[in-house]
Image (tube, rainbow, N blue to C red; front, side):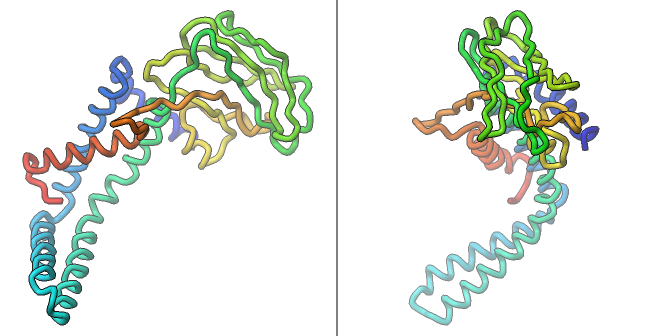
Length: 273
């Protein structure tokens, strides 16, 4: 899983890296446009377009019949049955392109989360870095944190028994990307920290190995086995995407723009959806 995760991270860095120079909304718009084109091509190449069009026409005819004969119970029930039948047919015909798109879109959105979902730390403002201890660790008084000159470690290690965590307060002095080094027994573990509001890959959690962990937190390689930890975390703030006064998040913007582009371009691609 680690090799696959590294390969996917490299691939998505290559695809999305050039967009990091753009404002977040501009990058999301371009990714939504590319996704819409992929969706349209998937439906064009893998779905029976004639059957889809016929199914939609049949559904519309049955809906019109329901409105026209709403005072005739027998005709109304027959029309409802036809709507259900043609809806199921439409869903069956849409299954093939949906399956083709499902895995790559999920992988894309997981990696987009760590580029668009968070803002970086702010120079001059304090933040916490935490170690989550596993069941084998009781009190790691030997833990220490080493940081580059641009990041000040303001507190000694603080052990939180109820949360099974060790925490430090840090304060970055300048924008940049830094590597912190945690010394824990015989282990030296690293954690990346980004001090910038620009769009880039961030890693709020570096977890232990495991399929689910690497799937949900792909930005860094997993911690080594036997380190006594379950994760190293840094609290990045959520990046807001406010539309009409509502913070709908990057995913809401991405899905909405993708749907708009699909509807706007389906005629040009000759696609029935």
